[in-house]
Amino acid sequence: MTRISIIVILFILFAASCKKDETTDAVIEVPVGQLELIESYPIDVPEPSGLSFGPDNNTLLTVSDHTNQVYEMDMQGNIIRILDYTGKDLEGVTYNPDKNLIVVAEEADRELTFIDYSSGSKLETYKLEIPSNSDNNGLEGISYNTNNKLYYVVNETNPDLLISWDVNSGIISEDKLNFASDYSGIFTDPDHSLLWFVSDQSKSLFQCDYNANVLQVFYLDERKYEGIVLDGDIVYLVNDATAKLYYYQIKKD
Image (cartoon, rainbow, N blue to C red; front, top):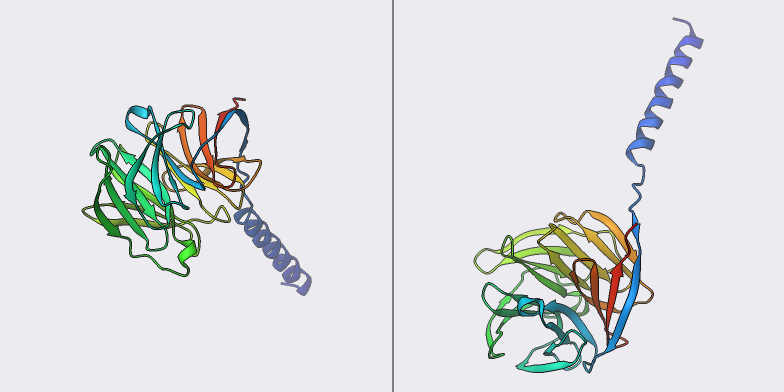
């Protein structure tokens, strides 16, 4: 074989290798959805953080990381009651209809506290053993999945984690998240097997599958959205800075 032939073959192999790497490293674009603001309501909750439906989706629950209390509101953000329980560094809240419980996420101590919905009294507290790099980068959101009976918890950042957990087994799984600058709220949609994340710093809402693969992203107009629930194509969000409840509609193509 001549020297020229060897050079040509090596060039072809190099070009093929580059093409393969190029294909492997290609960035997959995520579809961008559109939101339309329907209404916003001021709520008398200082620094609301976290959002959940109450029983039968007829009320809303939120927590304040200023007063460290749990608030139940009507669908226009008017306060119905303030629970007796006062926590520490409350950031997330969810309602468990199977047990008639409210569960709150306490950021700094990485704890989940169970509260009786009817009485508002504290029942039990469970600590999640996860890395702790800062008191301010702990548990930020929680949502109960009525299908698999698990709680889905997000750790804000450092580490960026999605945790599935239950009372009997503790932590079932930990998945590293990497699609936002931080994670400030989570909602499980068991009817469609979806997870929804809201990010304060990225000013975005993410629709994901149960493995936290992003299916669609929606850009928000400002920061400090820290709680989310959905009812069909209506998105409910609370904003820590404005102390407002927002209704958005997902626009169809």
